Length: 248
Image (cartoon, rainbow, N blue to C red; front, side):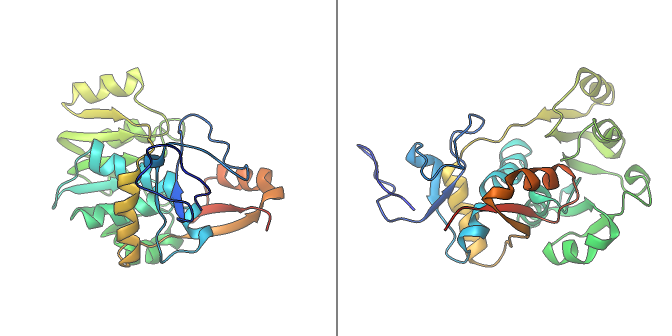
């Protein structure tokens, strides 16, 4: 909730319930009781969500939205492959790609397939059962939320892209090896770092409030279990997002 606004702020007023991802990649001090940031880094929180659900949205949803809309410029009918489709960013990426009219393909363990189909995935690949590059081809855009540090996922993804296709390498970025391999195949690469974006959060809130986009929370932890929550997140085995609850 907005406690106070500074000189010249016209988009928000005290009492407004907001959500946001202030200052990123600079630390925002969000574990504190209060935080300050430019007004346009916030947006009114989705009315359909609880505070805990709203807290799960900004970082993950903005990463998915900006990578698909601003970086890849996904168009209707394109084939989009999303690695780690069941994770915090991935489950938003599936829904946003569907919203953009893409044919959505995701990698996830088989236990997540029914849920991801409900979110809008058209095809799903259990990467533990079959190499994804043996199961899919002619991809226009790969959103790689895994990276080359695990099983060379970015490098391997080049083989599924059609000529001129794009891989957005999010956690690992574009290494010299990835860039060289992509250029030799006439493919495109892009690193990505999410940025604060109040207008995009406003659009995302609209999609949530109309029911087109759902927010999945795997588990909520009290603040004194923050270390445990971080450890759980680093396991790479969550369904949707983890949330910390502050003191009442």
